[in-house]
Amino acid sequence: MAVSSSRHWRGRADPFSVVAASSGSRLPEQQKASESPLSWFRGVYLPPALHPLNKTFVKGGEWQDIDSTQEKRRAFLQDFCRKYNSRKKLQTHLVHLVSRIYVEDRHKVLYCEVPKAGCSNWKRVLMVLSGLAASANNISHDDVHYGKHLRKLDSYDLKGIYTRLNMYTKFIFVRDPMERLVSAFRDKFEHPNSYYHPVFGKAIIKKYRHNADEEALKTGSGVKFKEFIQYLLDSHRPVGMDIHWEQVSKLCYPCLINYDFIGKFETLEEDANYFLQLVGAPPGLKFPKFKDRHSSDERTSTEVVRQYLKELSKEERQLTYDFYYLDYLMFNYTSPLV
Image 1: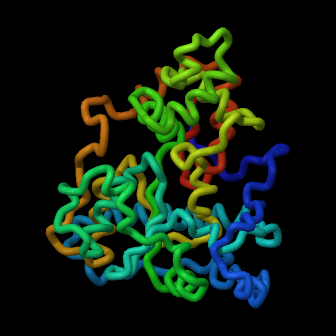
Image 2: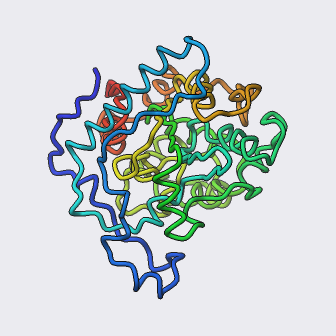
C-alpha cells in the first residue's frame, strides 16, 4: 500500500531535530563569532513558497506528462514538510546541510548526491556541463569519484552558499529505499573491495558472526545480508554509517533545502533528460544509459530485493523499513510487504 504521511511517529525521535555540526567546521573562527545562530539559516528555513520551474529551454510537447509528474512530486514533498517540519529544533550549521551538494556554475545547478540512485552518471553529466569533459561516456569511475573535478557547496564561503541556494536550480534523484539499500550491499560486499571489506566487513563479521573463521576475520570478505542488517539496526554499531546506505533525509535535508526538481531512479532516463532541457544543456547531451560498475550483474529490481529480504526475520524487515521510514514518506514510495 502507499505510505500515508499522516501516520504518527509513535515514540520515534523528531526527524527534523538535527544534531549540531562538529567543531571541525570549515568557517574561520572570527566568521563564526560574527554570524548569529539565526543568520546561519537565512534563506534556508523551509517550507518557503514553491517557485515555478523556468521552462524557457523546453522544446516540444513530449515532456508534458513528465512535467506534470514533477509538479506533483514537488507539491507532495512541500506538503509533507509543511506538516512535519519543526523549525525551532534546527541546530546544524548551514555548511553541514550542504556538504553533499555539487555545484555546476555554468548552468547554475546544484546536485545533491544520493549514492545508488544514478550519482556516478550524474557526476559525469556535471563534468560535461562544466566543460571538464566532452562526453560523459569517456569518464572513468575513478575519475568521477576520486578526481576531485567538481566543487561541493560547502567549499564556498557563507555568501557563496546563500547566493547559490537562492539563485541556482537545486535537484535531487532518489530511489526506493529498500532497492537502494540492497544495491549498496551488493556493490560493496559481494565484489572485491579494498575499503569496505577491511573497514566495514571485518567489524561486522567480528560482532555479528558466531564462530567466525580466521580468514573471514582477517579479510572482512563474505559479509551476509543478515549480518549487514544487524549492523545497520544496531544503536552501538562497531563502525559508523556510510553515505551509500545513509537515509536521504540525512544526506540532502529535503525539508530544509527546497529542491526545485525531484527525480526518481525508477524513471531515471526520462526525468534526467527532461531536467537537462530545463537547465539549457547542450542539445546533444543525454543522460548515460550504461551501468557504472559490475555491468554483468542483474540490476537490483523489486524481485532481487524480495530475495534478499527473505534472509531476514519479519522483525528485522519491519525495523529496516522503520529505519528508512522518513524517506518512504517524503518521496511517496510504496511501503514493502514486511
